[in-house]
Image 1 (cartoon, rainbow, N blue to C red):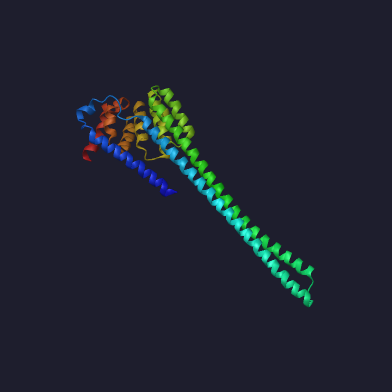
Image 2: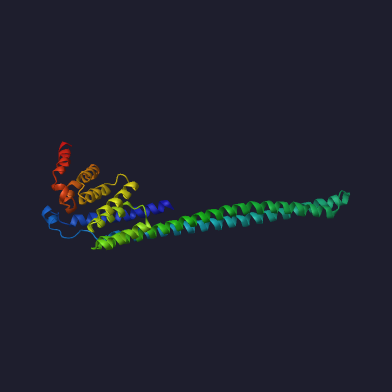
Length: 294
């Protein structure tokens, strides 16, 4: 079952690589001057949605394959039970014939009566059948437990796929929403689905800063750091929040923490209007001095 899934993934990957290679050979080289002239992104967010749909379909097909395999296993177990019961019945019948023949001989010699022998035979037959029934009942209980576990696993995977798809759809809406207030509402919906989503907390803090609420933004960033203490975006948003509150020492501290985790934030800080008071402050020279030494 898993090798089939891996084979499908390899086929999709090889087809994609071939398509990209063919497209690359036919395209002309892109110059730096052409890149600077770009006014819109080179990709579409619908590609991500396409990949999610493909992944969802693949997970559904895999779940269906698992269900079909389990049904086949159950059918085989039931066939085995039928064969076992038939074998036991035939064995008991032949054994009864043997006992009947022996009983006839014993009656002739006067050892016991036919009635006593018949009762003993029925008793032995009942005991054997009871043992077989109990054994196969245990097997059926095990199979039923396995089917229940598989069903729960499939249901859990389905819920995870639906949750991921809904969260991705909300992220796409947030990227296309120009209003900070509407963005906050979308981020709240994401946090309602996943309350430990650090990215949603930091991006919500960014939208809150646009509404000139630096204390609220700082609280959101501290909450994000409790979940992920090494999140560089949370430190960067804290620097913006404390700069807005004119607490430049704290702003410098959190900006340094962000730069220690991602040095590329330095260029963003110089261009970010929220950090402009900090960049123009002489205290900012400390960061540049530390970077020059490094």
